[in-house]
Amino acid sequence: MKLAVLGAGAIGAYVGAALHRAGADVHLIARGPHLTAMRQHGVRVLSPRGDFTARAHATDDPAEVGPVDFVFLGLKANSYAACGPLIEPLLHDTTAVVAAQNGIPWWYFHRHGGPHDGYRVESVDPDGAVSAVLAPERAIGCVVYAATELAGPGVVRHLEGTRFSVGEPDRSVSARCTAFSEAMRTGGLKCPVEPDLRGDVWLKLLGNISFNPISALARATMRQMCLHGGTRKVIEIMMTETLAVARALGCEVGVSIERRLAGAERVGDHRTSTLQDLERGKPLELDVLLAAVVELADITGVEVPTLRTVHAISDLLALRIAA
Image 1 (tube, one colour):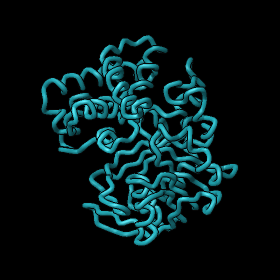
Image 2: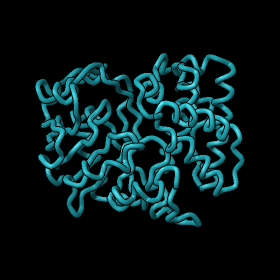
Image 3: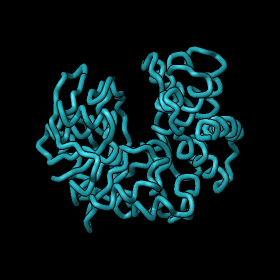
């Protein structure tokens, strides 16, 4: 298996290191001091499950890598539309793109079936700009349940979780999903192939849609948001509205809100990726989280007043950051 990690940050480098350990031909695509460190010392993974180093090939030039069997997409979703020049040299006719993104993916209604089959979510795929670069036919969905962070250039700290659920948009258990899953498991990660990954999409989104924007607005950690009565109540309401949209689209999430909150509280003083981006002055990845679900509420007729309110305030924050 020849695989490129496009956007080899904390999650991407962690996956690349695991796959390299499994014997895959891995190429990490990154830039800056992080790339320099990976070239010189490999990827150092610090984990409660055991530290290790993977010396996979690292570059900033995808043309140096050439076509691969799989591209693991570690970029933020708001970078997808502009990634054409980076991803094109990596593609051949059957290259699969494993998209490890939060929120509603651009492929969500591809071969979905039902009344919304083929619907393009404008908030996620404006004017089809993402689909033009990443054909939905190439997509393998991936929902990440692992928490990692960059402890320094070339150093990934694995905090918790090893599960990366994958699945086809058409709900088939394909040979390419199975091959990727086996390689991940050989590298020490959990990678179940889900017949319908959309359930996992909504389960992960249940936390991201609420904790991520609130953490940025309040500059708060997971534990702080859960322990503060006011923010906890707002998060409960946002989760309730999100579940209503999921149900309207035929998707039931088999986890209670209280259980989801208890799990978040156990994470402790972890800063969400959105809060980390805010602190670093980076663009906030909120369209695929909040804006997309508000759009889906519009097409399904579900009332989501709290989601709309938090989206309006956090969207203004995102615009100010980008200005």
